[in-house]
Image (cartoon, rainbow, N blue to C red; front, side):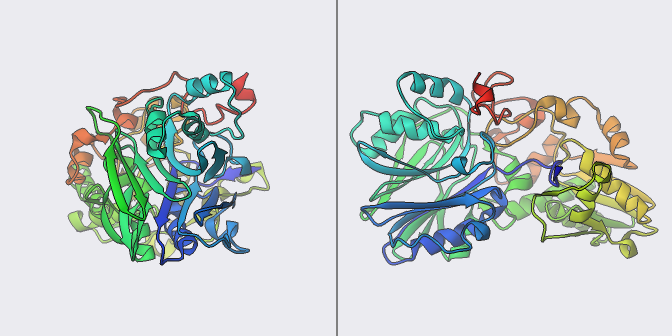
Length: 477
């Protein structure tokens, strides 16, 4: 059988990267940029490049180094875009890899998308009735079709004309023969930033990719902003307004790399603050603080700093295993966790432990880790979670399962504690979470997975972002 070793984690969305530069190797820059964004998607990767006349795209299944192990696209060019994917709509298939590339009456266009459209079903049905043919089962293709069908004159006008028809979360990098265009939806669900590299410009989901390629961070793209980059420079325009900005709070809790800065907030500092706040809220007493690596480590360090309890590496992570592996026997499901993580018996034996992790989704993996620590000799495991309970699905680009599979949707904290076998369990309060993300106003964050307060259009149950196979043949019956 196939067993997902990350089954108790929220899934990353996607990572996008784009570069316009005459004096840089844009393909190599995109390759290194995608490497830096690999944490945002491990299912597939792709790079598209243009020399101003012809576009070339190379895509494949797997990690960045696997997809391009035989070499990068050879066409020289001055514009390139790239994408790493974790599927939130559409199966993990080669046909669903990005960047997408199409020919239309205005020339060629290539696009990479991070996010999830909440009205994709309705828009796609309308386009099909008008004769559009779709080659994939991903919602991103809806945007490309809308752009190709627009009767506006310039590509920027075509894009704006298309975005009027869609709802949900989207950050886009779009490449024409002579322009690189970046778009962030009016709510700002997903991050996108601008950097300067030599004579050119870079767009990236996170600032850590700018650091990797040696680009200077310039600024974040604002919600509802589109920027167009060509030989004349950068032009910004507003295309959409909303009364509610709603950046995804999980970028700070889990998704983004700790060395990134998103909308002015250091991700590392936010997670460190979450750990400090956890220590003040929980007041657990223990011999050591450990993390579930790597996502819980920064918060665990903050907990240790605030509480005075020493931090130790009680769990060791195997970093040479992919997300999924072949499990030979059903009865050995615990091997899924043990191959990924192992308790350091000499550290935890005879110790009471505070274990910090970023979230609990289903609770299955947390229970196995608690049991592993106790089998290694831990006298008590007090679990701290650096986010509130996740009780509601996300419709904006995170692959949360149906609500009934979220453990916090049906169980109270004490029931969850009993389910995972911990001696104590404390979730970070929503107020504590907001205080930890000090540079971002709580009013400008999306917290819907905690409190069901959805800031934008949501589809009906069963035809929404948590139905990732919406456009598969069976899903269209």
